[in-house]
Image (cartoon, rainbow, N blue to C red; front, side, top):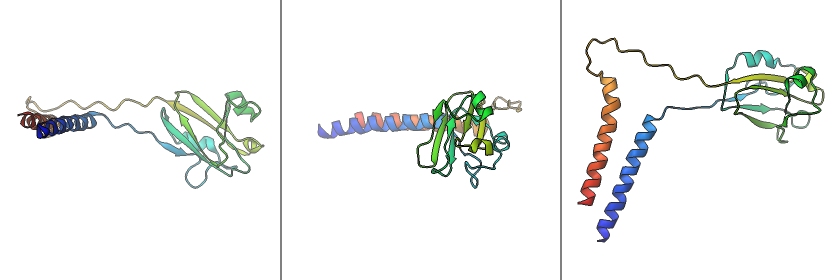
Length: 178
């Protein structure tokens, strides 16, 4: 009786593992990007044109901005567009400064973000505006140009491999139950 109980539990576990593998194979890859503001060797500092840096990037919902700066002098403030243009740090929407000089800002809403550094550094160029967009859908597959309706080897493997795993899991479960 003990062997039967152990077999039922491990059979269920096998089925669960196979289903999990099947789901992982079928789920598309999703990734977010962490941008070091200003690039890897500059960071958040004065005398850098962040407008030019931001124009060379594409920011998508789910990405992150990583600010690296001198924590004793500078900060990271999120402001509205008017305060961004005038370098007004009196009423920030959010103060992202944690005190370590290594601050991460999640870009989790599709909109414009405006960042400045207070203490007069904004006037030296420490301001950044980014437009966060929705990630575009993946490109659609090109239609098959083959005149036959037979599956190509690549497309066959997309169906055969999961079916083989499913049959193996069912066989394992059947053998353990009997």
